[in-house]
Image 1 (cartoon, rainbow, N blue to C red):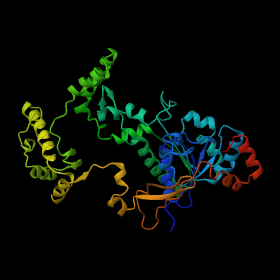
Image 2 (image 1 turned 180 degrees about the vertical axis):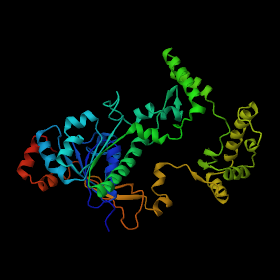
Image 3 (image 1 turned 45 degrees about the vertical axis):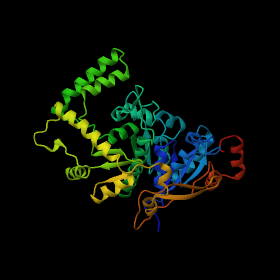
Length: 421
């Protein structure tokens, strides 16, 4: 059986992570996806390269697509797009607004060629405001959105970004796939295409939704005080380290956080997650500890509470060191307490749970051979997901141009001129 998006044709003008990931997800759901790259390739191909034109980061977000090369700055590209765009349903773009217009892949230009297209554009900051045409990546948005400071990871006085995964970019990729699927459904009912705009900045705010809830009567005054303090400190050229220390002193965290965190054990580390009082009390029973915060007269601001919280954390940490990870996981499992091992990436490919649920796939690449990677994240009972092979740079250029009616001799001439690879 075909996937849920079988018959849908997607055209990508994308690079790096967010929109390429969206294209890959649409391909997994059955769409026919074609990625257009410049002859020299998406810049993501040169990040952590494993060959002259391939990299692991690029492979991670670009399986299941046809790949053609085309220099969009040329008149030839405009001719090709005039033939290609009318044949597709969806266009994905993640250039800055000014770049998309300069390359002739902005919404209005492509709408004139195909009014039925679903055109999805992801930018760093959005089309409005003074930052609209600024370039921006995941790291930049982590800082600007408050995410980096909220993480409070500071080394030698310098804030650290979340570096293990491009959290904002990947979340934007998933949201783009959702937005496009919704727009396709709307088109089925209305018969009209449309433009979708989304941003990395908006994605970051959505990720931090719990931090961006302000109750006017409870929070407004404190927020104003904080803004005034930050402004005064920056005006006085106070260092980030000192500003952070002052901020933390004015926004103290109540110690005693033992219920939702990682612990080192006798031979590694585990995570423990107790998000209900029932689970928290079970953990206390397992560790043979008491928590005065369950008392009705508990005052979190008292010196006794602060001292107790620090002592509680210390005692819990010492207890977890007395047994191996395996022993703790067995014990916690018997009590129904959510817990898991802290693993390295290399261990996860062979994890029995990962294998049992087919969460990875082995795909063939014409230059690299077998590539193992993360597979589709869901299953459909009636319209199954799929994983198509990985494409090399420009692998489908000739095939696509021939289908559009261009003779091989003309294609060869364009290659000689550097317009295609």
